[in-house]
Length: 83
Image 1 (cartoon, helix red, strand yellow):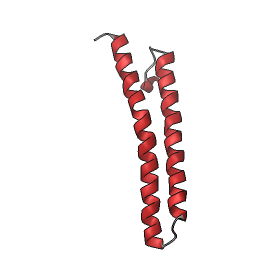
Image 2 (cartoon, rainbow, N blue to C red; image 1 turned 120 degrees about the vertical axis):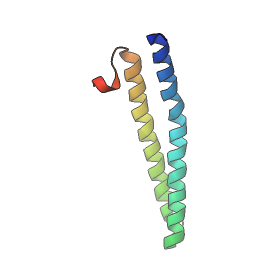
Image 3 (cartoon, rainbow, N blue to C red; image 1 turned 90 degrees about the vertical axis):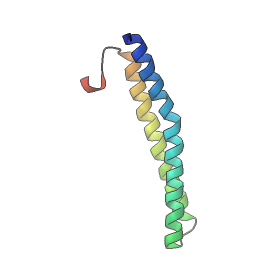
């Protein structure tokens, strides 16, 4: 397989995880808050707080992935372990 094809598959793999991780982080934050609200009886405050934490974590991951994709696209000879 050519290096160009490997780069394409690596880029597609990175792009495919971006949307999934944003949604998963948000859902995990929501359900953690919902569970803790049930335990402590503080509804809806912990649900809202952990939902915001999940959204923030999802966007941070989105930013990190975007930087990784940009680095893959900018310098084809540079690998993750060379940084």
